[in-house]
Every structure is written in C-alpha cells, then in structure tokens.
Length: 253
Picture 1 (cartoon, helix red, strand yellow):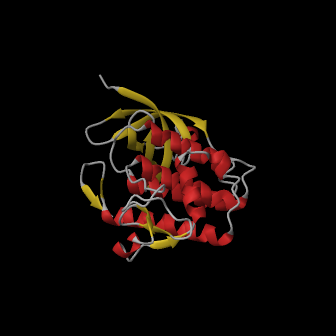
Picture 2 (cartoon, rainbow, N blue to C red):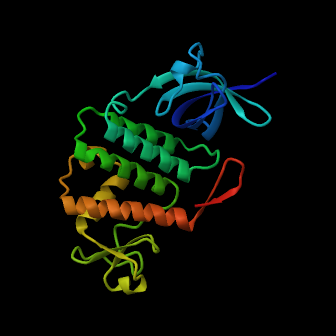
Picture 3 (cartoon, rainbow, N blue to C red):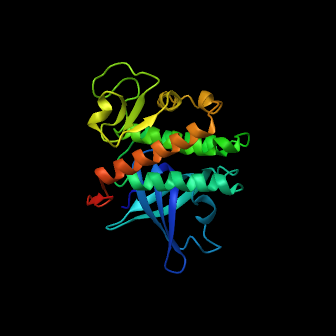
C-alpha cells in the first residue's frame, strides 16, 4: 500500500519539465526541504494547478516513489497576493527564495525556518510597508536564517578579546564572525569599519523585533553599509562552507 504524506509547504522554486510537468522545491513544516514532481500540473484541467505555485503556502499531499516524490494534492493556504503586484517586492521574494535554495540542500525538519519564511513573506506582503523597507525584509530573513544555521555573528563585544565595543571604532570581521575592536582589527586586515547603527540593526534583527526594525530611521550611508556587510558575509559563508544536496553529495559553493 502506498503511503501518502501531508504537510504545510512553502513553495520557493519551480522548474518546467517535459510538456506539462513541473518540479517544485518546497520547505515544509514537517520534513524540511523537499523536491517534488507534479505530473501534468501545467494542463488547464489539472486539479493541482490552482493549489501550487511559487511563493504559495499550500497544504500538500505526496507519495514517495523509488526515485522521486510525486504530488497528489495541493490546497493553497496563503498566496501573499500583494507581492506579485509590485516588481520590487517580487524581486525581494526571489532573493529570499534563492538564499534558501543556496543554504538548504538536504531534508531536515526545522519549524523555525518554516516560521521565518512565512513571517518574512507576511512582512513583505504588508500593503503598508514603505518601499525603503523592502530590502530590510530580505536582510531580516538573511541574518536570521544564518543564525538558525549556526552562523550568527557576535555583535555585543569584540569577538577576539571579548572587551566592550567602542562605538567610535567598530569593525566587522567575516573571518572571525562578528564585531571586533580597533586593537584586534590588526589580526584581520579584511575587517570592515562599521558604525554603531549597523550593530543596533543586527541586535534588533536577532531579537526578531520586526515592529521596531520596520520603523527605524536609517540614513542612506548606513543603509548602503549594512547592505554591503550583509551580502559580503553571506558570500563568505557560502564560499567557506560546504552544503549538502538532497542526495547527500557535498556541494561546494
């Protein structure tokens, strides 16, 4: 007898295959990341068509075959309908999906990541969200998923000497993994000078207080610096660590 599995799933990637089929990458509440085959879903008559698409949260049912998982049912739970209507929001949504795809390669249940995904998309979907906050939603997701995966940087003291930070001279070290003081910066010539605003933003992100973060007044220079630190740290983690694909093969980014 074929066993059917049911779970909530966040759809973050899709690829068309054959004439009418599609492969979906989803992050599920019960199993973590799954790659699922949907037969004939692109046909207008498909009963699966309305319940499964990228950036949907759907309740899915699937069966496990010898090689792949096959979708048997899908009922949409939430569509985040405001995101596709705004090209900038949709771009941020794609960046979140790509980041998830880069870091999560194997099946491993983690409800915290599922909750972070749905929270981040709910924040991005908010029709009252100001346009200068869009990127902040992405960085909120990025830093929190890095934290959940064990790459949370130290932002409360110098990560080398463990002394209190001087707000006038703070550095961020990708290699050490967090803030360091001016004295210790000689141990990492690639460390980047940052300001106290960056530290404040990171501390609030790790507290997961989106209500405060969304209302922060951040000047343009600090926004630019925060974006640079965020993307460079992400690139450093991806280039320095291995992630495994769904077949257990090590993938070096």
